[in-house]
Image (cartoon, rainbow, N blue to C red; front, side):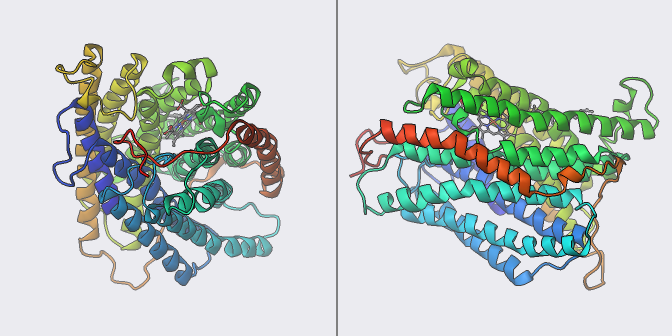
Length: 540
Ligand code: HAS
């Protein structure tokens, strides 16, 4: 939470830099690119990984009625913390201005890469805690369905494990030796390709814990049931199959990769949108059922009956607002996935507009709601300042829509991403001044300030709860989760085992990535010396 807040502060500063309101960070010093790096790394990589591990540690033992090996859990948490603090410190010292994608030829201090490696290895360790638990449960419960929440969390970490192999190879064999000066040059295209092998499944590593909460908690909190248990299982298995062989859609505009392989990755990208479309229908049906149970009538009357503003059901607001935002985030994703549309939006502010409607929308809101719920359960405390907790996601969502609208429309008008517009395009004295963009840049400042206020409201409730008195005097008081019952509980025996889906995923990965890597190796030679975003000449 502390690192999240530092990152969120970095986000607010981003909007100020882009509008030309500041040229240097008033508190931590440094410029736009340094701020952008710590905003992206702390919020998109560190917070999300911590939450995914925490949710797994909580839900898997709870659902399987097993005990967590706390030594493994603590070792993993400490590794993740040391790694994150190390990476954050190197960024704050100005030694890793490489943005969250750490593409070469931008070069970071070796400790930045070591820090990220510790974060990832720590998260692997946590998931190894769950595998024996899961296998043991299967042995003891032959013929029974694994609880859906466990299927979702295991899916999240299966994808994470496969995806991180590529980034581990990129860091260990390319970036670390290069950053330590053991080799002079790095193959930029190969590094980008390995990064996106990891980078796209990374977005589903972010999304799936939110899906676990949508499928497992939302229907129950709304007062209903999950419309179809089978749909949930199918969705998770489809993510295993389709999340990885799609990374080249981030490289449509890159040279060195043949058009036919970009087409293949494009087709699979439309495949990976399907589980989200199934989710949209299943959750809408679950919410309709809940609304009707609460007295809603007619085709849309149930919508009005959902507990949007019930203080005791504050968690509902975090989940439903995230889903609502994801309608727009998802549409944006499908636009990006279409090659011709991508040529118009790639590397423009449209792209951060898209990803704030996904990772900073449904994912962040679900994780914030989940964190508050978890902290209350684990510390045996009643949630404090529930009114603030309830209003916070609404304030945040209004801000998010305003900011993303500014970024998206600005992007369609050609406003670049990852560029300090305030230093040039938003400055009337500059020859690059673009009057057309000013309105959209200003919108993102207004939106960014509202988002920041929303997060501060949330933190009042979060830390208010953490520092309040425990409501339970019993040692080891019982924790509970609002697990939904299914409305249709289909047997779906074909969805009970991960193995076939992992095998299909591996086949698709080999088919889609072998030609891409061969193309890259054939088209590139030598490599690049290291650079920093602020210097047109190599660092050595
Ligand atoms: Fe994306 C770029 C394509 C989903 C994150 N994406 C990014 C980047 C990030 C990101 C971080 O094809 C930038 C990377 C960078 O720095 O360069 N994305 C997609 C597609 C999807 C998608 C096809 N993205 C996500 C998710 C993310 C995420 C999820 C984070 C968590 N994305 C792309 C492409 C690019 C890209 C290209 C490259 C752009 C470029 O050129 O650089 C799909 O998975 C989306 C499917 C989603 C849906 C929506 C379903 C709707 C639901 C809500 C239902 C609502 C209900 C509520 C039930 C089809 C589930 C009812 C309401 C009531 C009130 C009752």
